Length: 172
Length: 141
Image 1 (cartoon, chains in turn orange, yellow):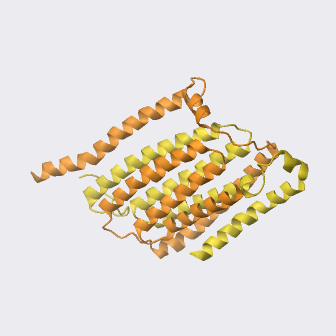
Image 2 (cartoon, chains in turn red, orange; image 1 turned 180 degrees about the vertical axis):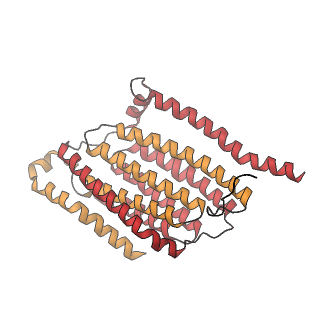
Image 3 (cartoon, rainbow over the protein chains, first blue to last red; image 1 turned 90 degrees about the vertical axis):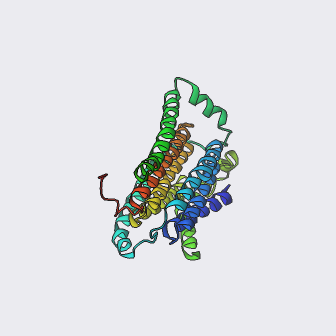
């Protein structure tokens, strides 16, 4: 468990570093793949098996393919970061990071003082299904997300298609 | 690339060290009773450190790049950092599985967001011939 945590944390952070600092956008996209897969592994070490599987399916399989598709279609212009902007931004990022770590420290002390004992991880799929489909718990968010996904499906197709039809009208 | 890796591992190990010492001080009795909660993977702060570093990397990506696709990738990184927090607090706090439900909804919304945002990026590229966010500064004429 400990060893797996180290492996997945290293994969996550290395992927994040490559994504943030590599010059080539394709390398960055693959760094993002590594980071997302590492996050899925962290879910597994936390006992969230279903969530980790969903992360691999949706992010590593879906979002990244979309991203690479967009990269393929639309990177004629420069992808490099300008160092002057980086120097300007570094203190901001440092301050944000300090705040984040301080907040984490405080909150984790509170949670540790609650003193709940760790239990052996159990399979979560059945429980998640029950919670999502029971009206007392998460049925409403579930249906809202379903409607939203339908809207997104139609909306994305409409937005991406409108450019084509407009250009065809203007050329013809 | 090897140097930051070693550094980060050292940071993670250092951050989790007090928790490990506390777990060792708690004695052999507790250890035999609960064999799950030991080491790095058994402490909340190690997950929080990873999530914090991921969050800061995402913010740095968003602030330093001018390409719209990089900004989308930074957003995904930040969302994942938040998700690690949800799941970690659900595991180590006394909240049962609710954190995982939140994280599930966030993953679904992030997928939807990525689909719409990439469609918009394609459209911007079609209209402007570039996805540099400093050059897309005019409304439709």
